[in-house]
Image (tube, rainbow, N blue to C red; front, top):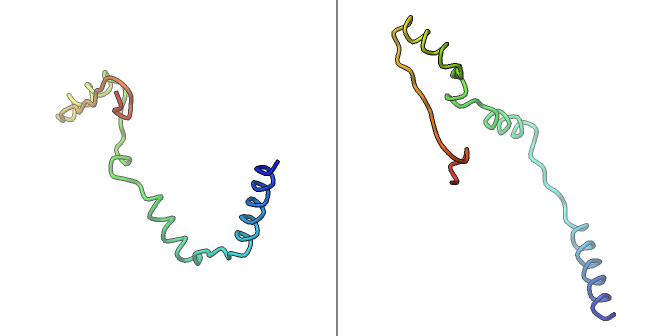
Length: 80
């Protein structure tokens, strides 16, 4: 019973101290700048990746370009 009362008292104390704190927000211009930086595409995302080897092989022969193959075995994040 005593433990329950102490737990309730602690929870009430935490709620009242958290309610007195003010929340700070960033100005809208800072948000727009940060959002633009976070949503910027990486260079590898701009490549038109192909998944059909026959299509890639035909394009490689006509364009005279090499084929880049990314192959791996295991978990996609490399945690094997």
